[in-house]
Amino acid sequence: MQVVIIEDEVLTAEDLQESLQQVDNNVQVTAVLKSVKEAVAYFKSHAMPDLIFSDIQLGDGESFDIYRQVEVTAPIIFCTAYDEYALQAFKANGIEYILKPFTDAAIADAIRKYNTLRRNFTIKDNSAGSPLSAIFEHAPKPEAILVHYKDKIVPLRLDSIALFYIEKEALCLMTFDRQHYQLKKTLEEAEQLCGEYFFRVNRQFLVNRKAIKDASHYLSRKLCVNLTVSFKEVITVSKEKTPQFLSWLGGR
Image (cartoon, rainbow, N blue to C red; front, side, top):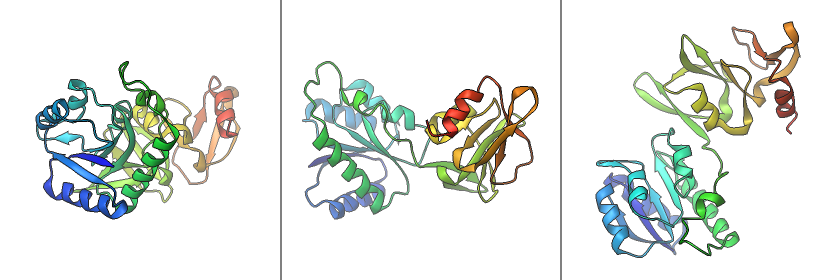
């Protein structure tokens, strides 16, 4: 299997090559590309590899700039320190999204996913644009979100988050162990990132299904959402959203 790595950090690229060789000794890294300019030139003059491992933030731009300039039909596994590009990545032939620092286990899972998809899908016609976009349109969401805490960037697993909420026009989250963090995102972005396991009950709250103990009737035909963890505010579901919420809560 021929693999191209797009990564501008030398040590990270070396670690990735080592992980790939440990996971699958059939992997052959044919090129390590350090910039948008270098990658564009490479893909214009070389055959397409079987798989691409790509960082997003490069020294001369974002790797998405590469895929706008040249037609890349190979599936891409994105390895990045930033979680906010997930949706964009899956629209650019992305089949997996790994947050740095990556582990050998994460690389192994990504390779297994690639091999499974390769066995199950046959790409017949690349001339009308890459069909991978359609195949992976519903690719799974990232499993973690990055938060800033003091001078550190901390990855939080989505399943550790009880809810997102708006406070003083800023987006915050609370974990199941009642830790609170502020995010540089909108509630809409969080909703897209979290997928079907979270429900936006109103304009201020996005709630994890696992955090809901039950729901009870409230004023004006609204529902009150009772959580498994204590929270300072009453969380209600608008009457317009009640049927959709109950359907979601029931797993439909």
